[in-house]
Length: 399
Ligand code: FDA
Image 1 (cartoon, helix red, strand yellow):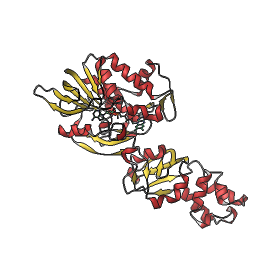
Image 2: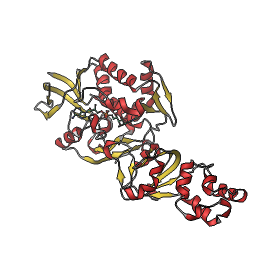
Image 3: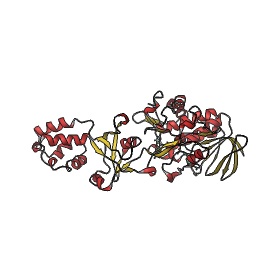
């Protein structure tokens, strides 16, 4: 069977690319080894898909995207913008809302978005095969490709790899894209989990286990001077370590063996509040603190030092200053992360030096890579989907 384009991977980028290419009049096949398409879209954004972010600054993409070449994503992102995708969502009558920091979510369910992507494929006469695996991809004499699939041999002028990253293997993530890149001599940037909860040694973490489930706004940072990265977001204590948007964001910048630093009360002037409380109150320090920070946190923190387990009026100025400092600068070194089992994305991937930023075509003519398989990783907040849409659109427009 002959096609103009075969897209491997019917996720966010693959379905969108197939739809746009089909509507340009190309004969397109999109295939996926999973029974259902776009499983990651389905579970994204807590089931409501944070499908883009209004605040992407296309002139400074490195602000929200991480890559060995931070400027690579600029061309695609500036030619297919969040507004373009919002217009498509509106055309399909999908209700959505902004949560915070420019993040747009479906009102009802991510299913709306999947139906939209499939409808766009149908409008372009795209053939969809799933479940259908690919055993081999070969270049053939006339510059085309032959694919050995579970449904027989397929020939195509172009092949688009949209198989995503390694995160959440239980819903179908594989290293297929990286293997194909290697097969055709393309370079890879080492992969690691991104947007992932961080873990700690069991002994070091034991005092914090009673805090599991607690969520609070924090300032979080990692790195030294030049590489310092900071976020103001919510933190979540878990049984094994730290999670929540603050930690997911910082995890993409965190280097193994280095600490993270947290200000657990960024919106409170703790030194001043504790000094004032000392002048007027005879309550225990933990009880005074509980009016400023969550009470479970106040209890856990004051238990760390005998000087903090007394009425605040009896505490020394030095002890209170130390307590305030301990809240403002809690430094702790993770022993690792929850890995691909829990990561929202895979950092690294196909090296952008071997891809065209205009078309996503690789050095190997006719072979394209789009979406998460490429070494472009966005922040939490809809940036990864916008990269999927934009890279897919750049590719589909060039096929
Ligand atoms: P995607 O993973 O979507 O699709 C890859 C497809 O390839 C899959 O359908 C897979 O089955 C298929 N495939 C893999 N190997 C194959 C093989 N060997 N043969 C055939 N098919 C194969 N981002 C965001 O912007 N907003 C959000 O709200 C969220 N939320 C979120 C929650 C969770 C829990 C996760 C894990 C991730 C997110 N993300 C996110 C990230 C986002 O889901 C991700 O970046 C995009 O789905 C990437 O799109 P791709 O099309 O590149 O890969």
